[in-house]
Image (cartoon, rainbow over all chains, first blue to last red; front, side, top):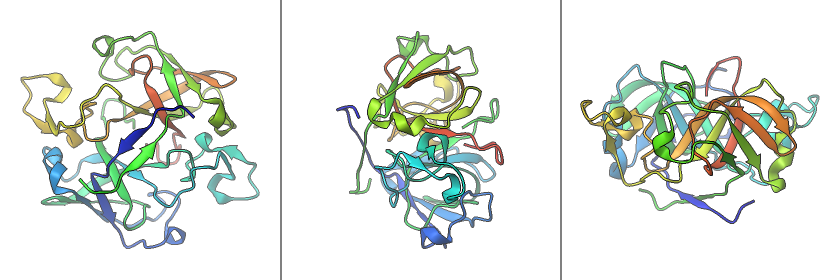
Length: 138
Length: 138
């Protein structure tokens, strides 16, 4: 790794009915519930112009992941050959960032109801970005 | 902000013909060039199973961004009303993470040629993830 390092602070966290990683589906579209994204008061101004119905990318910090793993069996399936973590969506990776494309379902002050989202309760949120309609990308 | 903090290390960096932010288009699909993503030897094993033609999300650290900005004019256009940074793709935001959906064009050892990508030369890379075909999401 390089000698550089960057320090990130959560802008908020998720409140979800999923309490344990074992309860969570692999991806949001695989039956995940909705969750509340609670934004810290100090950055809540940054939500202005977001609206119900918007599609957003929530970037999380997968706080229970292992950072020293470089190869995994995709989807935890041991019949699959080992792959590099950068070719998979495994939470285990050097910088365990999670990307979740969700819809804004409700806005209540500094809280956004979003979903479906497979991250567990208490997951820190690092950033929120709109999905760009021009490119339908991330 | 919260008292928690997370430390991230670059897994590599971009080598691009774009040398200054002023030269860069706003988004990759707006005429950006291709770039080489040079991965650090210590994590290069994590690339295994990536192939030419794959669509990936590159997560960068926008090292020239301002972190104390919560409202911006979208696309830097002062005729547009101010919006919260979380409703825009502005690089200026509390945790300046960049998301870039690109294609893998060439693989040469620990280097991936990817593009098109609007990030400037020297931009640190934090993570690489495959685009999921099931959900075409981020």
